[in-house]
Structures are given as C-alpha cells and as structure tokens.
Image 1 (tube, rainbow, N blue to C red):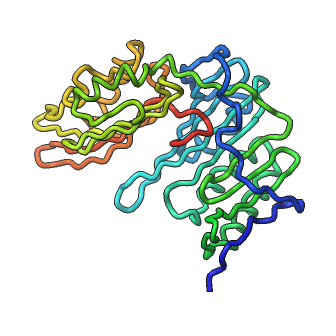
Image 2 (image 1 turned 180 degrees about the vertical axis):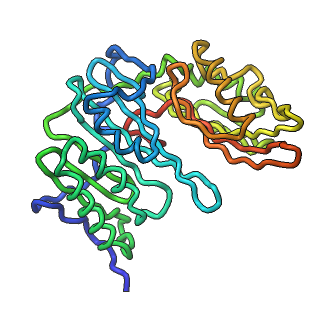
Image 3 (image 1 turned 120 degrees about the horizontal axis):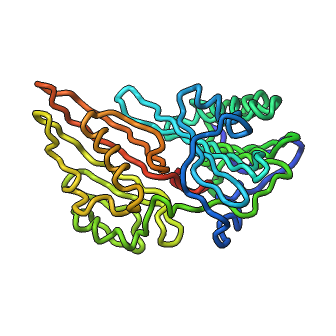
Length: 338
C-alpha cells in the first residue's frame, strides 16, 4: 500500500521549512543596472569558479560565466544526456559568486527523466566537494535517503510536494523532485544579481514582426512561445521586461548534393534579428556550420553562449537530414526555463 504524504518532511536539526526557497530569491532582480556585463567568458583558470566547475567539465559539461555585475558573477553549466532514441535530456547547473569570489548560491535543477536517476546528486556532490570538502558525502546521503524513502509516495489532498533540507557550516540545502537542489551559502549574500543581456540580444517587441514574417504564430505580448507549424519549428524566449535574455528555437536542415535545401531565410527572412548586430553574423555562421554537418555544439561565440543539439541522419550520396535545437544566451539564474 502506498504511503500518502499528509505533511511536510522534518529537516535535519529538528527544524521544519514549510515552503521551498523562492526562485528567484525575493528582490534579486529588482534593481537598476549595476555595471552589468553580458559578455560570456570562459571559466578562469584559477579561483573558486574554476574549482567549482572542474569536476563538471571533466565529466563532459560545458561551463561558462554567463553574466556579471558590480556585486557578483553568474556561472552556467550544461550537459546533453542522450537516451536510447537519441533524444536529448539537458541538465543544467547554475552558480552565483559574490564580488570576493565566494559561492553565494547554487541550483541543480532536476532533469525531465526519472528523479530516481540521481543525476542531481551526481552533479552537485563533486562540484561542492571541490570547495567544501565535507559537503558532498552528506549531500549524497541526504538525497539518496530521501529518494529511497519516498519512491512510492503520492501527493496528499493539498498536493503538497515532499521535500527535505539540511544545514552544515557552509550552507543551507533544500531538495525536492520539482526544484532539485537549491544551495544558499551562509553569510555570503549577493543583493543585486546580474541580469544583463544587451551584448547579444534585442527586445522581443522589435523581433516579433520578423518572426511572423517567417511563418511563426506569435502574439506578443504576452506570448513568449511561438510556433511554426509548417516546419515543426518553435521559438521561445525568457525575458526581463521586454529585453530578451535567452532564446531557444528548433530548425531543420536538408543537405542535398552539398547544398542547403532549407535556407535559414525561410524561417528568419530578415536574419536572426533577435540578436544584436554585434554578434548576429558570427552566431549565424556557427549555426549554419552545424546545419551543414549535422553536429552539436556548445561554446562561446562572439561573447555569446550558444548550444546546439543536433539529431541527424546521413542519406545516400552523403546527403543529410537534421533537426537542431538551438539556445542563445542563458536565462537568469534561478528562473525557469533553465
């Protein structure tokens, strides 16, 4: 007989947290620009950022500094897991460092796969152990015990989500299957979180007419998710006000006799106008390279985060059919989608 969750879980230290931590923390982005820098940068070769992300990068993750301001730096890491059908299940980790290069906050969202696959713990434990040597072992134990204890739980009458949490000398940790693991460091607050994207992105209101011209069904505002039924295409953004912070879209490719039979201009007749003129050409060239070859990519192009997940099939005479899921930029830390 399955256990029904009627209340929240008691946390280590005999405390109870009745609500999960707010994402994003209250007031994190309610501030004027504070020397915002939205040029993506590689992880530096030393310091906390390097130590924190080294285990992830060794495991095949791509990591970069997504943005910074006068108070802190936001790091973004991603890996593309492939299932048996070659469908990509991306996994992301986000970190916020303060101006003194200390970890202030971290988030390891769950993947869309079964929460019992322990991918959150597999990413978080080595990363945090690299800067807090005693943190990883307890983290693995807490998450495993929670997953094992509640494997067959169902929601109660009020649909409460079972969750757990604990503290150590470094941070406060909260974990559930909806939000994954949120880590808030002790005594390391960052009042103004970085939000810049002006280097690489324009506004949604300036881009929406061009999307419609390319066949997208797009009504903005308020719609932030546009579809193109003719090609099974989609275009969705995360925003801060009207400013685009990140953009995701899907587009096909068909190479016959060495020539592209599905030009980018069919869907973006005026080019990728949601990108600034500074980065538009190099980012477009990088996308076109993946469309020609049917290959994936994750990196920094002209100071812009670009990830491409490609699914392709080689036909007779070397012809190619592919579909690419593309993301430009990284969403703001602690916001959905990731």
